[in-house]
Length: 118
Image (tube, rainbow, N blue to C red; front, side):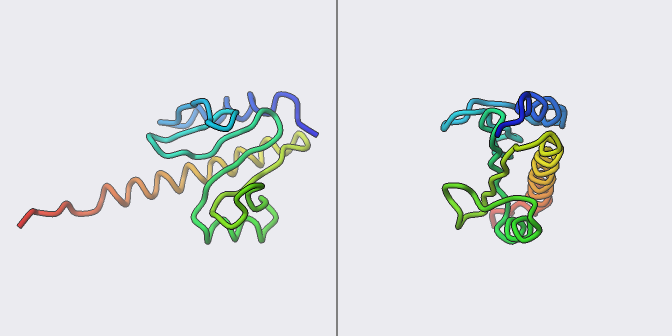
């Protein structure tokens, strides 16, 4: 069962974060990005799919905070179904975690020394 208005409520919160943009997702729904990196996407008011590093994905699944991706279960992607009103906040927490991973990876890449070409 979908949570009416969940997609709009999640979008309002996720788009408030610095640098996040919304785009049409190739398999339907709305994709959220930080730069070129996808933070995850939502299919209507029913389902959220979010990519994580595999170790973090395994932890989230083990803790019951998400399920393996509904189509690609052996990847770093998770799926989270929106079944009741509190799931909106849980989905936003997962998007926020994806955002924080993206920020951390972006800053660590930016801090890497440039090759000097010698």
